[in-house]
Amino acid sequence: MSSTAAEDGELLDNPELVQPENWRRINTWSGRTPVFLIHDGGGTTFAYHCLEPMSRFTYGIRNPHFFTQKKFEGGICEMAKLYTGWIKQTVAKETFTAKKQGKLPVDILLGGWSLGGLLSLQIARELAEDKDVRVRGFLMIDSVCPNEARKTAIHAAMGSESEEGKSKNQILSSRSLTEARRMVGEWTLPQWDGELKGKRPKAILLKCRETVPLSDGGRSVLDLDRAHTQLGWEWYDKDMFTEVIPVDGHHFNLFEQTYIPGITRTIRTALIKLDTAPKEEEDEEMFE
Image 1 (cartoon, rainbow, N blue to C red):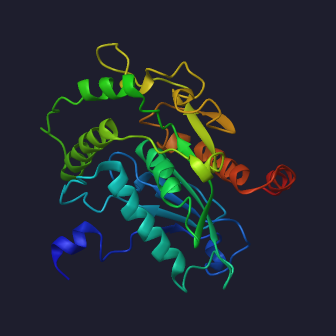
Image 2 (cartoon, rainbow, N blue to C red):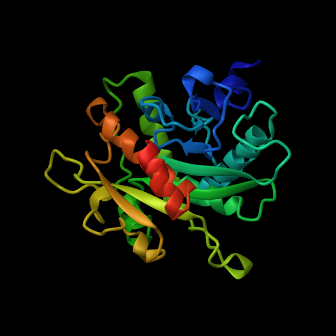
Image 3 (tube, rainbow, N blue to C red):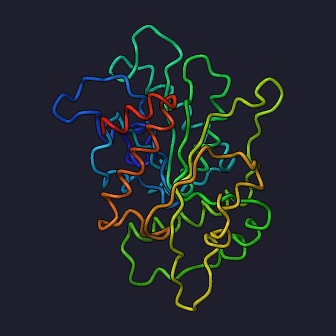
């Protein structure tokens, strides 16, 4: 195996199993829909590995070009197509526990922090007419809507940052974030029209209560729509979310250790809501 292929992730375990439904019985499945969590703008799935038990099969997809910094020339759509293929390959494996053997389509949930939420939306569109995999719902974790005004602000904020004093991984993450901003700025959000009208999977938004502190006292581009209930998504669809749930912290620290118990509970509850009908939802919350 060449080092380049390994770094690109094409021959590595991607998607990776972040946690099974039950660590004590790793190959058992209760029927809860598995979730695929997509990396943030920094390109890694580190934050998802910090979560406490989620009580469902949880997979993570990281940026395969994190180490090489190779660009996705086709932007968000190209990245989503690649990840969609990986999800389909993973679900098709005999070792994929969280499915009913011989029954199609296989249900999944999608989600992600920041860029991961945007990619979840695009992947859901890629799978909208798929016969093998069906998206029951997706979770956006403080993912700001990139409407036209925000794209302009994102572009203006793309100045080069000093890499002095940073570790190799910090530099790679920063460069990945810059590339993510470029892709988001060029992205045309997907539509469910024609025969798909009204069939977009239900979605939930987790929204940070605090704003990102800046040294100059200004406001981060990620907080320009913080006062809006849906972080600007009403521009895309006023009925985008079935629920918006507030979470502690700001955009960049909500996965820090002090917030992990709370964010884990909230993500777990949100996934239950996406995975169940109203009556089932009440029963699941009592069980939790």
